[in-house]
Image (cartoon, rainbow, N blue to C red; front, side, top):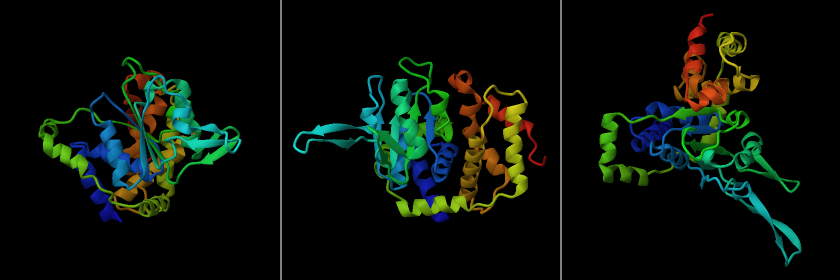
Length: 305
């Protein structure tokens, strides 16, 4: 199973050059059954990473370009009256897939953004008094541009909280960018993306993540971090009990990738900023892409107690 993990990383890193840490966090997020938000400037490889992940994991995916005039029905689907049968028939939207790539999600209006809330939390949608189940597994990988750019709408805190992780790609180093400029090689890598695992293997990996053991001392460390956010006054947006569970699940996925069946404090530290940054900072810090709060909180709590 871990040989497949190595193959996945090799393929992803051949497409997105010089971003090994970001690809690891992205895979951790999906193995932990979470949703991923990728934020950065246009042209940094956000969509490339998202589509490469979906193809590499052998999942059916749909890419939706979010725009300011998009309506919820453009994502969820719509009921159309069938005159021959004298009844309404539901036509599924692009959300009925295993991976939904919501490209530039913050260019859509808040009304359209909110259409994803139930789907991301409950893995179902409700329309016209009917409930429609989404495929299993179901992931949302959303990309967004910085909020100071024209034509963007900030994601509300309730929407941000649906994402297990938020990551940034950043500028590539000089060596990676030089390889990108060698056009045919880079383009051919993108075309050669193949499925490394299938759905059954992915579900087995997620089940293995659930079985990762966490002793009491590690759980106490996690809880001290959470409680420090609530009672130290470090943030006006303290971490919720739901964040505790999400942080634990993400740390377990990191331990699985590192080929361990037990949790250590370093697993929590490796995912902490990506899991808590967008929750702690709120809209003010989020607009600035500020990770100082998460890192300060992490530095303030001793793993040894």
